[in-house]
Length: 262
Image 1: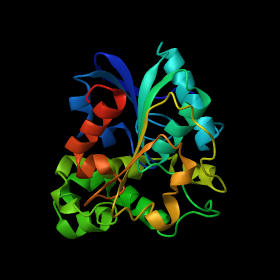
Image 2: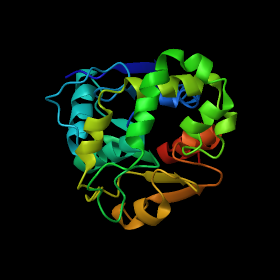
Image 3: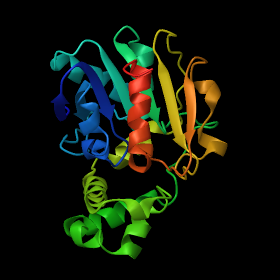
Image 4: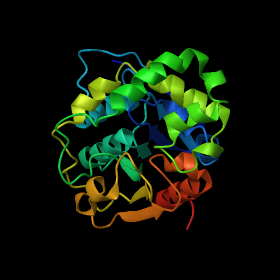
């Protein structure tokens, strides 16, 4: 299958992978600035954003990593930096493990897969949120202006949800409500975790928020599952999408990891 790609900027390639129920629009707060130093390639995973859902496509992170690599091959991209959020972060780890010779650096924003014990079922509460997003996606611009509705959708994601712009809220709601690949992706990560080694030649930074309710520290941030050379950073006042809470700091960490900034 073909993945939708949005490409901006110039320079070394930087691939951005969003999380489950999201889309390339998740990077709207940091992609424009990053495109000043990189050719930014924002991809939509199967059944997310503008990528169609193929029921024959395997949706586990390793298989999605292979699909991303095939997409990059089709785009003529040999070597690249890569960053991902949540499921996208796990996929980025799989790609770096499988193709360290192609991976110039990696930044994981609250990457999934670093849990003590693999999930055997979907997290309770995910189905109602997905259902709510489907119901309100067509009226998302109006809903974004209602504080209690905004709180229902985003308070569990970020302690700074009140500061989110209407555009960010609308785009995230539409992405979740339209994501036919959401539950297949959920099922693809069950009974699995990231358990591979990554070559020391690949610079790695892992960033979690101190109030990540989706992947909390007590169960889902196991440092032993990433290489010893990885930098591990905790952002204060940040939830499951650090690039929404602290975009400037996320840009700085990408630039540092890629060697663009000391």
